[in-house]
Length: 68
Image (tube, rainbow, N blue to C red; front, side, top):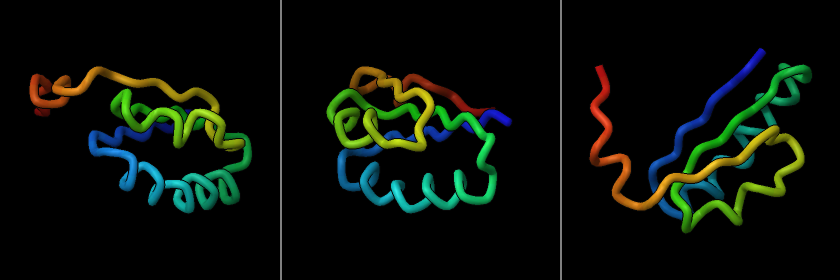
């Protein structure tokens, strides 16, 4: 199972997601967890042992995204 977490806030919000990531991985151990955040927060999450791939977007990207 693939799980994508999109976090468009800064470092503090990303840090608060770490327990959620641990819980997801505990209950879905074969999951590949992908995490997308802003560049300023990538260092908080990129070495998390349960994150399969951490990616970042430039600041301001989220204001251009339109959700349907």
